[in-house]
Length: 201
Image 1: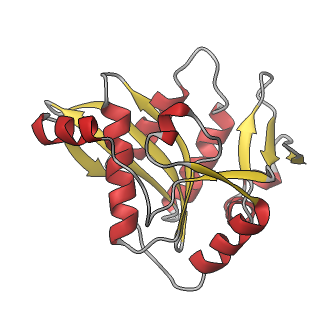
Image 2 (image 1 turned 120 degrees about the vertical axis):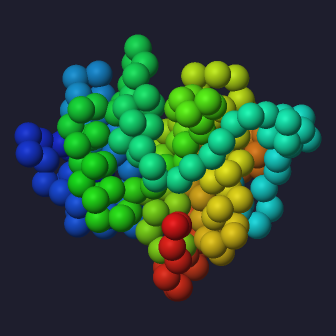
C-alpha cells in the first residue's frame, strides 16, 4: 500500500472538492492511531462485481424470514458513528466531519437496517456517478451488516452501477464474490463508471 497524501490541521485534502477528486481517482482516507489522516491508493484492488455477485443461500433464507426493515440515507451520520464506535478505528472525528460535508452535497450514502424501529446495522460509502466506494459497516445483531450489503449490491445493480469498491478482501466479503484485481483493471472500471451519470437514490 502506498501513502499518497498526509493530513494536516484544517486538512485541505478533506475539503469536499478535493475528497471527491481523490475518491474518483481510486484513493481513500484513513486515520492512524494518532488521528493523522492519510490517503491511500493500493495497487491491488478489491471489488464485488455488480453483474456477478453472490448471495449465500442461507442468507437469502434469513432475509426472507427476518423482521429487518431496510432504508437508505435516513440516518447516515448515525451509521458512520456506529462504524467508528470500536476499540480501534480509522474513522476519526475529523474524518466524520469531512464525510458530513460531502453528504450534504449528495455524494455520501448509507444503507440502514432496523428492527422494531431501532437501528441495528448498516453501511456507508461514497457514490460518484456509476462508482460506489464502500467504506465501513457495522452490526449490533447477527447478520445485520450482511443484509445491508445485500441491499447495497441489489440497489447498485438496479441503478446500473459499474463498480463497487470494497478496499480490502476479507472472508466476509468473499462470500459475496469479492475479488482482487490489478490497478489497470480497476482504472478501466473507473472509466466505465464515469461514462454515464448514475444516481444512488
